[in-house]
Amino acid sequence: MPDRIIFHADCNNFFASCECLERPELKDVPMAVAGDPENRVGVVVAKNELAKKYGVKTTDTVYAARKKCPGIVFVPPRHRYYGEISRRVNAIYCEYTEYVEPASIDESYLDVTQALPFYGMAPEALADELRRRIRQEIGITISVGVSFCKIFAKMGSDYKKPDATTVVTRENYRDLLWPLPVSDLLFAGHAAVKKLNGKGIRTIGDLARARPEAMRGILGKQGDMLWRYANGIDDAPVALFGAHREIKSVSRGRTFPRDLTAPQEIHTAIVYLTDEVARNLRRHRLKGEVVSVQIRRPDMTDISRQTTLDHPTYLQHEIQQTAMELIEAHWRAGDPIRAITVGVGKLVDAEAATEQLTLFDLMGQGASRQKRERLEAAVEDLRKKYGDGSVTLGIQENADIGLRRRK
Image (cartoon, rainbow, N blue to C red; front, side, top):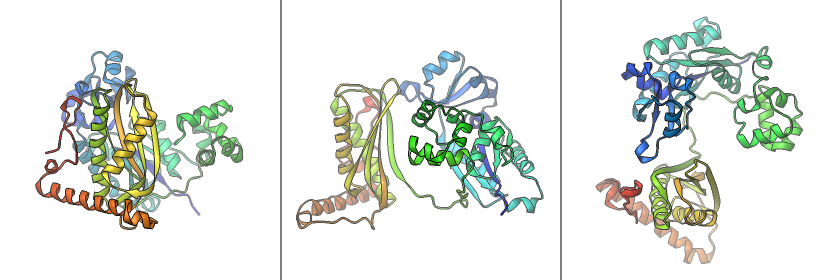
């Protein structure tokens, strides 16, 4: 059976490139898209090539980026605008194949196996055609990786930037990819790389040539997965464009204008965030069993904790209570907090979610939970009718830390 032909198309410096479409003068100066420095969400989310030459990196703070490049120009992000450009880019992809799977706002996989005979083009020529059209019709550039599987296509698009095509074949992938550091392999995280390096595995080739059982011994199931990816063993399909993608978790986070230290401020933030999480769960008719909290320190390091409930829920007060318990158990009172994210995972359809209720539950907690669900559903109905700020479920406004009641 012949190999599939998979593209991974990656928009170069996407947010920054979008901004340059409307403000061409930004092409001639080092610039970056970042949040509001005054409200301390000033993290670089994109930069142009001139800023990159100064060493400015995505996730740099505004302070760090300005220190590397004193003349850098910052512009605030406009996600709705970037979404519109992304839709236009994917519309061009869809002219060639219906198998277009967006991986993020600026990346998409394409399966062009059936399209190539129709267009009478070699894979590299079709990738170059896509690059030309995006450049001429939209005004930004893309890099395209071409391969027989999604993993190597993605690595191909990362191999050479900007505005480049890289073809990774069964004949050349060992020469092209195996010399790269193992950290360049997709899904090889920092902790895994540290363990592999400790065992003398420093390149993708080292990993690929190792025995799979040895990798399982080092990293468990992840070791087996990484070994397969290093050897190009990946049969994951490219989804049809617009196909429903399962929601795996719902989360909301907030970076605060100043560090939080007071317990009441932290409680206010948790109430605010869990209200948004619960509303989104209810909107998607989902319940979840795993509640997680991520806290970011002022030095930009994170601590993440999660716990599993004994029943799936979308109740705001249950998510709030669990999130507070996680913070109280794993965070020292008085230590400053820069940002908090609350999430709910292990999701199931709300109507299909069932519990094994004891007689005591039916008379007590189970009945109370059903009443609370009806209460929160009624609150949501009032919000839809009279506005988000009409009923707040205990949310206290605190403009000092950037939390305001929705209108």
